[in-house]
Length: 105
Image 1 (tube, rainbow, N blue to C red):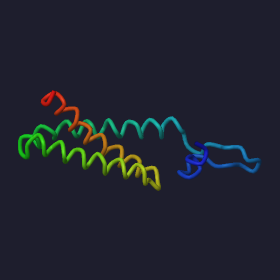
Image 2 (image 1 turned 180 degrees about the vertical axis):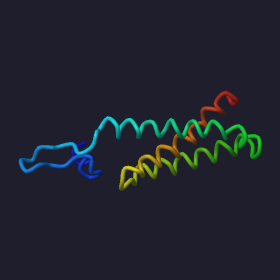
Image 3 (image 1 turned 45 degrees about the vertical axis):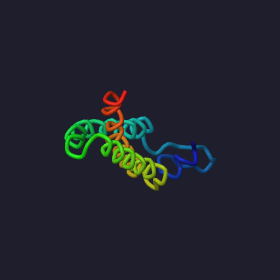
Image 4 (image 1 turned 135 degrees about the vertical axis):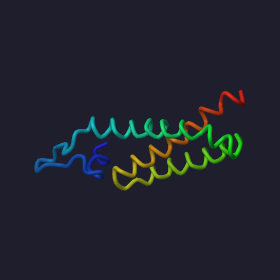
């Protein structure tokens, strides 16, 4: 975890080699988690409209593809805002699965 914090510049090593946090960790962690829920909120607004226009099966395929894109963005993140973006994209497309689960089962 130390390497992650140093890489994303939320912490640095002092002269003695002790990890010193440069930003509030709880604020960063909370906002990264909240960005997923923010994406869910926007996804729930558009999923029914999209399903009516292109169909349920195509909507699930599209949601799966975009959810994968969001996961790739998170995995390849170089800065913290990449994590925010990947989580928001993933959250938006998670709603596709949750919404259509009740229709198929």
